[in-house]
Image 1 (cartoon, rainbow over the protein chains, first blue to last red):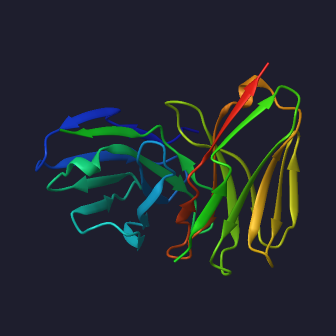
Image 2 (image 1 turned 90 degrees about the horizontal axis):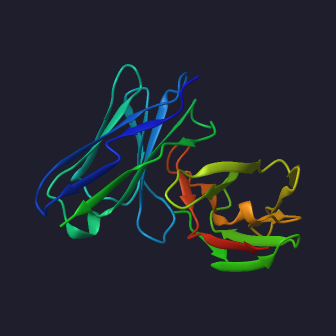
Length: 112
Length: 113
């Protein structure tokens, strides 16, 4: 059984650019949730994908978008990057709507 | 929506002492309350969780208690060890989506030997 993996581990972008982050869910899991963790804060829910459909969204603007693929891996896309988007982006996978969430190691995004 | 408050923000104990971290939540519809441990530069790891039909759960040195009436839950670590030093996050299911979690701001636990 493989765990949750994320790529890349680190990324540096400039303001206004676009970025795509990737997440491979744990074997057997069909749900992926994305979180943003600012320095010194708890993770904040961005959105969740269940069986390739968005299944809930937190308080993030539309320039944060996502996808889930048939193999249940997922992408997080952020357009028009702002300095405040600098954070650790975590994905978590689970089985079903009440499953335990297992986190990846995250992607550290720096926006200059 | 759900809001989770966590206290204290920092906690320093001597090795062997007990540590208690407390969280309150706002949405009475929340049913699932996990605790995660995050070491510096690493992923959050689930250490224990509790669902609303249970008042207490224990796993070796770690226990969680839940009071649904008062809408608060607590993490108890006994016989602390230096390797328990980390940031601990409580969370509640936000009821926005099936398994969306709303996290507290974290407690930095330092265990000195």
